[in-house]
Amino acid sequence: MRLSVNVDHVATLRNARGGRFPDPVEAARACLQAGADGITVHLREDRRHIRDADVARLGAEPGLRLNFEMAATEEMVGIALGLRPAACCIVPEKRQELTTEGGLDLLRAGPELAGAIARLAGAGIEVAIFVEPDTAQIQAAARLGAQAVELHTGTYADADPAARPPLLARLARGAEAAAAAGLACHAGHGLDHVSVRGIAAIPQIAEVSIGHALIGAAVFEGLPAAVRRMRAAMVEARRNTIALPQDSAASSCG
Image (cartoon, rainbow, N blue to C red; front, side, top):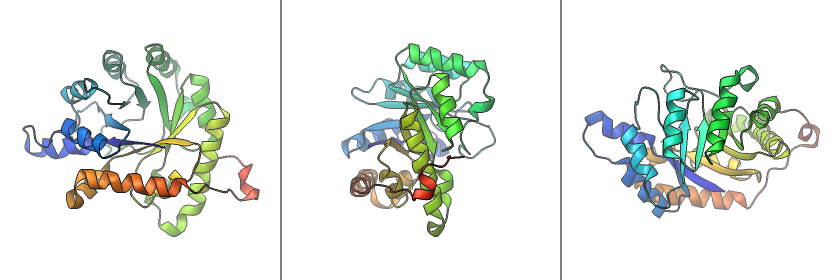
């Protein structure tokens, strides 16, 4: 399982005072040296954290696998086509939200989304769509031409630990549905060093994207140490697998 570290909130901290420090590109290098497999950034319409210059510098870093989170707007598609990151993840975006609040509703998507996906994929970019772990949404992602889905883990991660098992089972069924649809399966949103263990135990999930919890932990233990601890938690949990209850394994993810 790959670990892609989201460095958006390194830029948030920099922007609070202006200037150049802390530098999200330096943070990205530290994450990779500590065992991360890639870096995720979300270039928002309002540029509230990561900015265009950050994206350009990250794109120029040798050997860096960049996952570019983006809304499916003409502006962002154009930036992605110029940047040519290894991967893009298309996410919903609202100006007033503090963070992404849920998956895209692909059952109501217009032709513009399919066109954006085709343009990105035609440029050799792996295209994922951020969705809820719902069979219908996942199958719609495959019909639209995506190569991967990223399952929204926020509901699971934000829940009380005692309430997580059925939410984790739903994510496991979503991962199975993605594999059945021929899609690579990623996961992300709200995960920390504890909640990532359940996700890492789902064998179909090939990548997680984690940001806020790692940057928060870095305040106390340093960024490389936080990344190494996350990697260790993932490796340990990967030794186990999620066994779905027989009465739910064949049910829909909806």
